Image 1 (cartoon, rainbow, N blue to C red):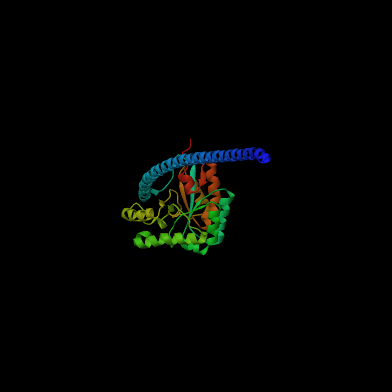
Image 2 (tube, helix red, strand yellow):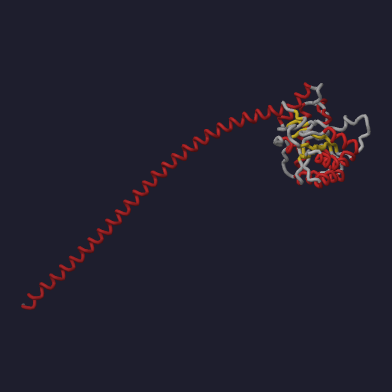
Length: 304
C-alpha cells in the first residue's frame, strides 16, 4: 500500500512532461504552419504584383504595337506615294548626261560580241580599274553567258537593251514588254539569280528621237513600269563619224575632244571601239576626268 501511494505522483509527473512536450510540438508545428502560410501569402502577393506589372507591360506593348502599326500604315502610304512619284519620274525622264559639276564620265558599251572580244574589253577595264555599264542584247547573253558572269563579278553593270535589238517604234506594246522581259530572263539565267537593273537603252535610239514624241511617251511608260530609266548619251561614234572611217585614232580623238564632266559615252562591242578603250580611259584621266559606270556618275556629288 505504501509503495502504491508513493508511486502515483511519478506517473503524474511523466504525464505532465508528455503533455508539455506535445504542447510544445503542436506549438512548433503551428509556428511552422504559420510561417509557411505567411511565406505562401507573401509569394502569392509577389506573384500578384508581378502579374500586375506584367499586365501593365503587356498593355504598354499593345499600345506601342498599335502606335507602330499606325506608323507602319503612314510609312506604307508615304512609300506608295514615293513609288508612284518614282515611277512618274522614270516615265518622264530620259537621261542624256549626268551632273556637269562632277568630273565623272560614264563608259557604256552596247550590243555584244563573241567571248574573246568581251574578255578583251573586260581585261582593259580591269587593267585600268574602271567599272563600266554594259548594254548587251539578251540573245548575246544567251550565246556567251560566262563572259557576262565575269562582267558582273568584276563590278560592271548590265542594262536592258532588249532581247533581239528590236526597233521598238515599229512593234506593239505587248512586243515591247516581251523584248524587255526576254532580256531579263536571259540575264537571270546566265547569272543564276534575279538581276536588278535600273537602266534601259533603246536600240538605235529608235522611238526616242526628237521627231518621235508620241512614240517616246508610249515607250517610256512601259519602261517605267519595268522600274527602269531610259539612258541615252551625249557622245557617240556611229553617227558622229559616219562621213569618215572610224579608225581607233579617230574614235579616241572624238571622245576626248567632246568629253566633259557628266558625259555618257556610247561605245559598241566592235574591234576598233574596244581597241580605243585604253587610250580613251588614260586620255580622260589626263584631262582630269574619271571614267566610271552609270551608277557612279548619276550618284556622284558635285565637285567642290
